[in-house]
Amino acid sequence: MRKKTGIQEEPTTKPLEYFEERRDDIVRDIREMVEIESPSDSKQAVGRLGKYLAGKFSRLGGQVQFHKAVEVGDHLQVNFGGKNDRKPVLLLGHMDTVYPVGRLWGPGTLDMKSGIGLILHSIAALQARNGELPRPVHVLLVSDEEVGSDSSRHITEALARKSAAVLVLEPSYGLHGAVKTARKGVGEYLLTVTGVAAHSGLDFEKGQSAILELARQIEKIAEFTDMKRGLTLNFGLVKGGTRVNVVPAEATATIDVRIARLKDAASIDRKLHALKPFNRKCELEITGGMNRPPMERTAGVAMLYQAAAAIAKRFGWKLSEAAVGGGSDGNFTAGLGIPTLDGLGGVGEGAHATHESILIAELPRRAALLAALIATV
Ligand SMILES: [Zn+2]
Image (cartoon, rainbow, N blue to C red; front, side):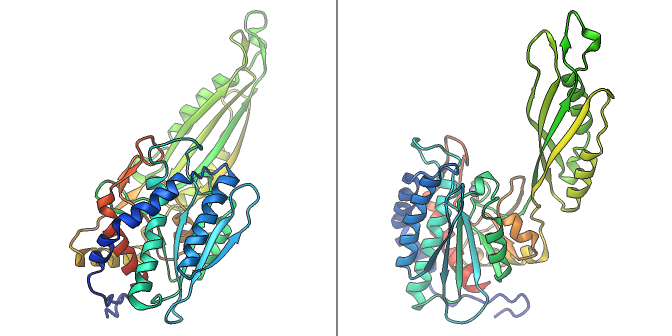
């Protein structure tokens, strides 16, 4: 017992060997999940994976429940009781992937079907070892993480509020498998410029170019980027104009905003809404906002990381931590002040890319780490 941090030593022997022996079973489960393709935009396809997983989790004795969703697949929640009435720990992840149906290789292996495999096997191991789980565990696998989590966010937040800690099974960082203790917040804005169309030869002076105005605004907005603060703005899509010989009446730009600190959300929003046209005859409209708050490395996050690093050390490896630019549903739970540790999933490379893959040899110790964390945090 280490009373100071509230972390308890896990009373087990040889958990790593247990998972080494079951490595092929973990790989088999992940392979089955990868073969049940589940792009965010196919409710039916994600639903198939949900059904498959509901069967797996109920065979482990979990209480399965689907949260109905309208446009995306139903979100899957599984509750496990435990030895005592400690607050549950929430194991959080998603079933959807960014890949359309009909691709081979390993789409979703890393992000994050291997993470789901680790959840299944760590629960099974804790049950096998102790007869029952050492504490209540809630599993939530949502269906829309890759498209912003609009449908599932309220479920994630409600479950997190009831939890002692949230363990997020998103991919780890880098080939050394670092966990993620800070993630940037993400926002998306659309800037629309309206000008006045005119023939570029006959009436050039009557036209007010929306593209020219947008170009000036882009220069101005680019200055809001502050690398030292971890604040970046990216123009990912720019559109405008109708024909080569027409002064363009409309132009738009999408702006991807990343923030490392929560307080930058309001100030960047204010700056974007305060933009004034350089050409008074053009109009600006800005829509959108922040989607996920940043996951900051709070004391609760740091405590979870230290617990995880101590467990890894007992298993003979050094678990490092990383701050990353991408957001996940862990941003929501950390934003509520619930201790959250992200990146506990598979180790590999190429998330969202054609070479997406995981390192099979890493699976046993990741499963052992997760099982120990469930028992002790
Ligand atoms: Zn993911």
